[in-house]
Length: 202
Image: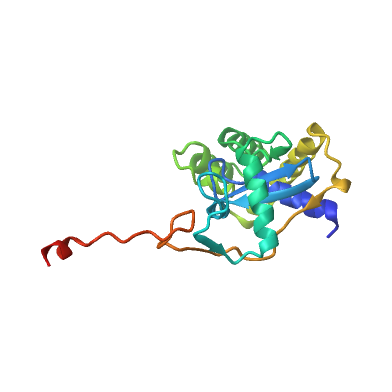
């Protein structure tokens, strides 16, 4: 897989993230010409003042931690050189599905999907961006959706004057596990234990 395809696939993943999900956020940094993502758990690296939390340890390498901390600080400080990758909104997802349903020849299958996903209060589709049904229908939907995702990715690149050939994709290979020492505060100071209620009776 060449770099351009890899980045387009990554952008498609970012664009299709659930609209209100905070699990992972996708960005482009105009300063370093790099694409990257931040996990919600990565915010444990910092305290409320955006300094490195002294009561938290991570399985990330020191280099990776420093990169993540630098990115998070810039994001929280609204650095204009960091662009958030937009996501398909709930409305856009439903519009896309409506367009796809028009391509289905079997009226029974089309009506079933419309009733299940468009005429229902369930938000399963808008969150997962997937459908169930006949295998041929599922495959047709995935191809239809991917074509629109890649078109939107291209539009994002053009609107922001990003030359994909001169960019890099930062992917952190390590699995970021975190340990918080509850005996210490964010400054690394030991929290003084309070006397338990029964000790007052001794």
